[in-house]
Image (cartoon, helix red, strand yellow):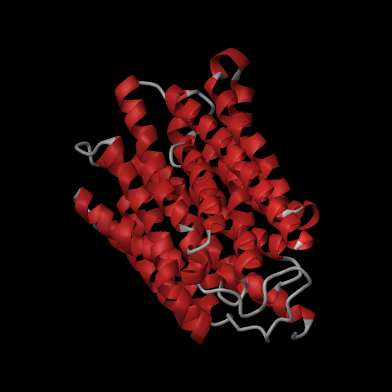
Length: 400
């Protein structure tokens, strides 16, 4: 392996890339402004732009994964920066919902997928000994985008309007991501640690044939849907439950999302991935119920509920890259995690849209929060089942 300082330098470049891409999580701030300017648009219609954007993330990862695994990262991240910046810039000209879906949804979303997948795979290859921490730090950069961009975007919107804000941020973030792409560098071949998959690993075709993949995929889908139902409506939930201004709540959620990726990723390196996942499910199931009973329990309980949801949501995003790499090999992680991340893409479409539909049909977010908590219970049950399967397979292998 190259000198120690080199891999931390590469990690910094990956974090910067994801930090810029994480601007997508500040959507609820943009959404509020868009609804004020475009009075004919509805909450459900604009929420779909956010859903499409994050549904495109696994698509971008799957398309770029094989390229990354074979030919490296600089060009892929460069293209990611162009797509992301261009998508945000063109959103400033969106005069119809369809154009919004094309610019912020498809173009920007593909940029996120190409850049996020590449940066994540890169760190896992450089840190075979600290997959949870490295994956968590990289994912934390992605979650931090909302912390930094939410207040900046809010002030810019108040000053120059939402359309001009999209244009300015598009140019700035394009430059940042493309600049970081020139820092990307492949590591030397890693020697696999004891107990982990070989460096060659399994490709996505082999992985998709395994029942264990689909169990983990379903677990990921449930927790991501639960989290996206809340993350995509943070500013609206803040207003509905009188928790504070939308921008501040988006920042709080973004901070919890970020810290969750680092904290839980580090914990998973010490306690094991699946025990950590179970702990996160307890936290993520408690959050929606605290938020749902804000009127009875008080404002602090509601804010704490949002923090719990975001903390665990970030933890899952920080842990699953490591789970995928350990189970099926780090050398194919760019491609393999892209397929695992399709669970997140489906959640991005289903979660925010479901919350919007419930809010518009019932006038309340209560049922959406109950469903979110229920998904956490289902996910926890499935991961317990998965852990028992692993124990049985281990016992069978040792006896055989």
